[in-house]
Image (cartoon, rainbow, N blue to C red):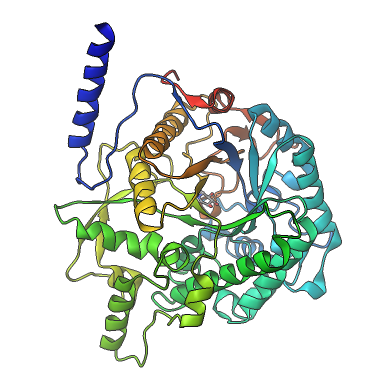
Length: 504
Ligand code: NOJ
């Protein structure tokens, strides 16, 4: 009797949650319930970092300069606390400390990135730096000796300065440089690395780096160079993927997987116009995901139409959105074994008839206005509001649009001042884990979750003013001790129990 009553209340609660889901999109969202919920047996848990943000050793053992070295040195005024990551958490010298805590957490895998200029100081194979390779050899070997799977990101913002000097991502030769770099990594580490991510968050280096000029290489060419940067990224990704499948997949036992990591928010409609959700999503996730993961391939229609029309209206001879030939479309379509997803936050959106942004610009092309719900909990980062149901919505969107491709969540996390009692981070992670379970219940093919970040680190233009780590690092202490925050204990329990419970 009692059981039936509880079930009824639970059902009513679910219905209430679905009805009260503002924005009314078609992806049912069930808020967390007060009991432990199990993840599928094969579901993997990990943590993530990136080379420039944690390594330090910026000029050691033959490493070349990356654009983040030059940018932070030449423009300290552009970093919130005028800092840089010359030393940072110093993982170049302290990987053993990182390993200790990765083990302590009980993680299945560790996602880290390789610094291109550490292994190829000029970006070119002629400059091969053996000491750089040795550093990553040690990292990979030590992880494997401890049963932790390495997940390697090839590019996480730190482009060799020498490649930027010849145009960086806007130079068509970039494609070959990247393929060549990827091949070095496959040859050298492919016998041990099963998970490869070609690029991390292309949106987040192309727009600020080549559109708005807030990240290096400080190119202000919104609507043009940022679109070219994305185009070359997608093509370079596909070339690196095809290369792996052709030469290395079989050689290394047919178990390796290559994907790309895309960051995306989910959009809810501010009015009752549901078509705006699709438009917003195509201008974000779809820009990169449609060419790679959709059945049709190529850029989303709405981008081709809007950017083409605007370009002609500006008196141009061709569209600012590069044309994707049939050959490229075919090479790119299907060029990934999984979708790496970085999810942090969401927005409400509405259509804007006359956008105010500069012409040309992404803002003008997309014509959407994004707002937040004042009820959403905000992190230290001004852009980061906790919207777990956005993650369920996003995973539903991916399932529907991209044939339920395997999704590995490669980043999710919350920033604060670095306090050890980080209940807000625990709540955030817990809510997002529940959102993933909701998506899995709805048939989404999610196989992994990764917390950003293992340790506090250099948060790009925000320096050390925003902390994302499960472990605190005092950047001015000589030994850079990694000190567990309360969330580290929470995450350890999640990994161990393979479930998320309601108890903090
Ligand atoms: C995504 C980026 O990949 C990472 O480098 C950054 O620190 C986090 N988001 C937090 O902003």
